[in-house]
Each structure stands twice: as C-alpha cells, then as structure tokens.
Amino acid sequence: MRSGRIRLDRAVVQGFYDRMRVVAPAAYGAIERDRADDPGRAFAETACGRLAGSLDAAGLRALGMWAHHWCMRFYDDDTRVGVRLVREIARRAGLGWTVDELRWLLDQSYAAGPAAAHRFVLPRAAAADLPAGALPEWGEEATEAPRLLAG
Image: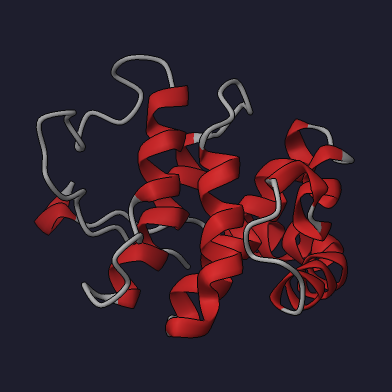
C-alpha cells in the first residue's frame, strides 16, 4: 500500500452508487418528512425508521451508505435527521459490510473533514462487522482511519 492510499475499482464504486440510487428517493422523502415531524419521536415510529425496518441487510447497507454520503456531502446543522439515521444503522450488527464498502465510507468521511463530527460513526460500525484482520491498515487503537481513495 503506497502512501496509505487504496484506490477502489471504478466498477465497484459505480455499483455502490447504483445501489444507493435505488434507495435515494425513499430516503430523501423520509428525511424530509422527519424534519417536519417531532424530533423526540422514537426512531421506529419515524419515516426513516419505517424505511429502515422495511429493508433487508443489503438494502440497509445501501441506505446507510446513501445517508452517510448525504450527511458528509451536505454537512450542516440541518443534517440531524440524517445523522440519526446513520447512527441507527450503525447500531445494527451483522449487516454484512464488505471491505470495499468500508473503504468507500472512509473516503467519504475524510472528504468531509473534521467539521462533520460524526464522520466515522458508520465506518467504525462497519469495521466492527468485518472479520478480524480484514482491514489491517486500520487498527482498533487508531483514533482516525487511514485515507483511502474511491474511484
């Protein structure tokens, strides 16, 4: 691994965007409905919660990747609903995250910069879901993950 960077195959990255594109309309609609709703409502009772509850593991990973991308790309005070969605997905173990998905999530996190306080929530959860040693360049003792390039 030269200079701590790994480039993901463009076809793999395009596959991620294709999968996210499937959930994006429902995710965006759910986030917009939840913005207008009671912020204290239990997650399962929110539009995002109902959407997350309706998806299988692959769909939930795609939703998590989309929400993570959306929050990292448009990070501001108005992403609270999206950040909540990311946190809730991060709490679910056994989603079958792949090393490539984790690398993509990390790249999105680094692109956002330190202003996005929650930028490593989903990558850390995804890393915990991987078998030991699957991503040797990011040890548990690390405070930040390595910079990885997507596409």
